[in-house]
Image 1 (cartoon, helix red, strand yellow):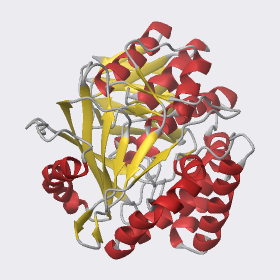
Image 2: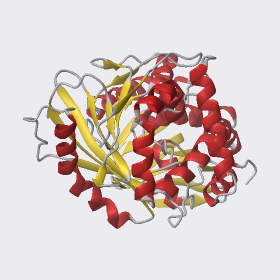
Image 3: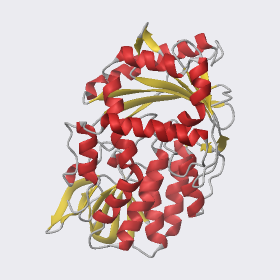
Image 4: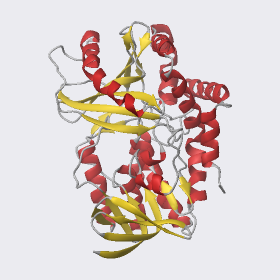
Length: 421
């Protein structure tokens, strides 16, 4: 098919890539938006967009049809006791999230990017094209030789762009694996369950059941596997056991059964093991490891990082990496560095996981910290309104950063986000 020239090649048309393409195209840039899959296509996900993600969409004027508004969340501990975490507005985000299946969300965002002027391509990124400035494009599987002044990798946890640009150290990545299914059930609140696989041996992750449009619920499990990607089978083996836990705790009706159709996917947690930008190559969303290391949400960070990557290219086309890394350092470094270290430590300690789940959902403790837990866990401290919840989250943040300040994880994140490197 020959050569194609673009100002920016965006590899991956999920939330991060589509928002990056949308912002760039609206500014007049020539954008090639490339994805290996034909849309609409599905992804393993909890399908919840948190308050920060809702705010990004509102800022960009993107309206999504068919969403289910969600607010408070319920966390159930190993004994069946639960805490209701309130969802309250802040200065920089609304007091709610939305639920929408990824099949519909990603299709809508890609359509918005194409409407803004992006040129869509359905092809795999193959052999990298290099020049004196590093990665300059890809040979695509449809025969196109795609060249660009800047490349944004938004192609997920196993990013081809990150590998081609030498921006990933596989030995350091904190991997997670999630398995999701849909079932016909009515769920009143988004629910996360921390349960024991055996008494006092906590599951190294959590299970969820979230509401969706109509009577369709999203059910799944996410497991931390650190550097052992062969451990993904743990999630597959645990899904049926998790449904049994939901029946036992009364979260799901006893007649509800998980369907045979399931979808899995990898997560890179907390930016560890990935350098998010160098020169003219930027990584956004899952490709950069921008997944909340405590509760696994990635859509809000994908939307925010996609927009920020585009703005960095527009602000400094010749070398956007420093601009972008500075944004990530301000916005995410403290939270991701500290809590990725916490996650890495907990995955190895099932008894501590079990004890933590019991403590946090004990009635007196849960009632006292619910507001602050919601702010801290959902990474909402920056922009939270003054009050007890904000104060509790600020204390938790200070403790986490102090406890993990000398950890290898913290050092990696600070180094990866340092400008001028």
